[in-house]
Length: 308
Image (cartoon, rainbow, N blue to C red):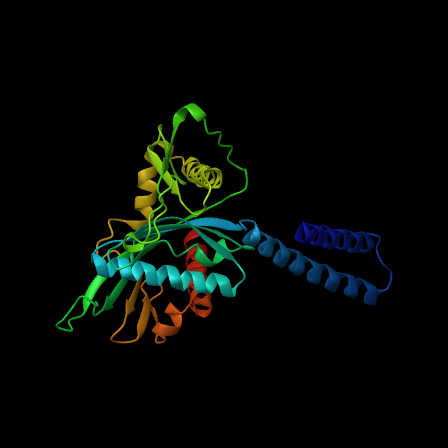
């Protein structure tokens, strides 16, 4: 609204200046000044509208899903590394991340982890993070020192405003209390506090085990279910929601990648913009702001070129 108010104010100034010109100012100097003012206001209005267009999709929350792909235990361990990287970055920018569902590997990696992220305009940082992330390093399970290639998928589901109305029919969902899981069988909640919800028409299954109470987990699971249904409705593919996720993460084959993390070369490469960074450990420690800014600017520019 502040941006819109500014645009209206500039339009008012523009119209007032135009009115003065139409009254046929007698002094040439005043006419020239009025013309210059019209040009200045016109450029400023255009710039403000462009800025408003860029910010109109401001989204303050989303769900992130990270899933181990090719590579078994090593992929699960790198999924944990990626989740830590994102968590550190979100903490640095003042956003929050709440784990809602997780499945551990034998060594404490993540076969799958889902989390709810919230913060001012936080989605802008993650809008291009969906896809397959590839890691090349010597796994802890490798005795010969040979470098392995593994993959992890990332899917981002933004939480839009209520532009798409979704009403969840209680008769179309199955709610099942379950036990929360823990790494390596430790810290497992023996009570049925976690909640699994299945949406029967689409087959979507959502699990929440973040909280110690069934009520809170049910509320979070329903919230995430609604987000997924909204996303599918928005893409006009409600009956094919599995394709929506597949469009983000592909088949998780090693060749389907948006980014590679190469440990022997201390290098991170984003293949979409063909750019590399040589501070891999800093990046894994959450120092990804500069990298994300570069990727966002490059891919935004590509999208603008493609739309012309």
